[in-house]
Amino acid sequence: MADAGEIKNMNTNAIRHVLKQKGPISKNRLARETGLSFPTISRAVDTLVAAGELLDKGAEKSTGGRCAQLYAINPTFKVTLSMRLEAQELGWFISDLTGNQLEAGTEICEGILQTIDTLIMRVQERYSQLGAISMGVAGTVHEGVVTEAFGYDELRGVNLSAYLNHRFGLPAVVEGDMQIVSTGYWSFCPASIRAVVCIYLGKIGIGGGIVIDGKAWNGASSFAGELHYLPIENNLKYAKTNFEHADIVEYYGKIIRSYVSILNPDRIVLYENRLISGQDEAIRRECEKYLPPQAVPIIKISAAFDEHYERGLFVLAENLLAETVY
Image (cartoon, rainbow, N blue to C red; front, side, top):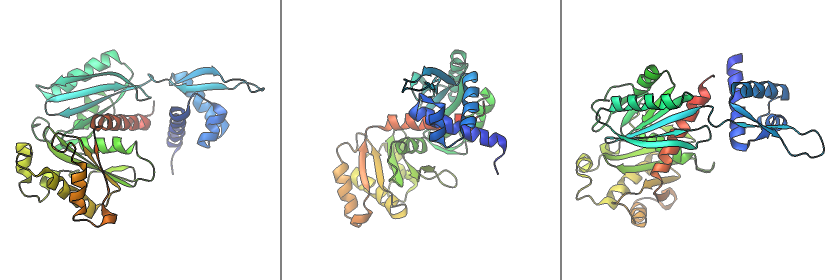
């Protein structure tokens, strides 16, 4: 059974959710939208206004009776820092509570941890209200620990989530890049979609992300999606030679068929790269040669990798804030 503190936090998060979706909004409407009693809503809203998290937006338009006060999220009450590491580039952006990006940039890493430390200290100097950190790594991350990463010897075995939390006193989450990208893609999907696979060929190899019923699935040891370990001839060699001499349509076809035979997803997203540009129909026909018609998922080539990555990072940071009592 939830204690009083947990119930209060759940109620507050319900109010935050409605305000983000439908604000500015009155206390009466908040009560209707959340199903909470008016006294509960009134106490919670007054507390959030006093803390600066909500803004009083004045009275709504008159309909003949007493005008109700409207309330909205204060978007800069808290901000989040999101980072993404691929090769030696550390991309980053700062978001307000509505997801609007306030700043963004890229750092070139000579020492990865030193670059991260310097960036976060710089951000904290400008944003005292920094509330959470999210980070994606082009590698395998299990419970915050970097377990497999091509070219990141400095990070291997490091619990990055714990490091960031202890170093800066902020809630932090670190995940593999494809778990984050697939989470971001899922956030744009209709409710009818049950399972999605996202596949990306980047600067240091190919990887996949899975979301099932709204939850990213990365496996018992977070190894799901390490596609270079599939039993495909020359697979590891392809990772080191940027797919030199590979039949890329056949290769993608084998990966998709592997996912279909085990997971049977609704759709598979292939992120655009120079090797598969314009090859979506050829890849689909390759799959249709070996799969029954009902098993062939929607296969889509997308140019929105960056958008989905950034959205996934924001979702992770937003979830951390929701778990934080302040």
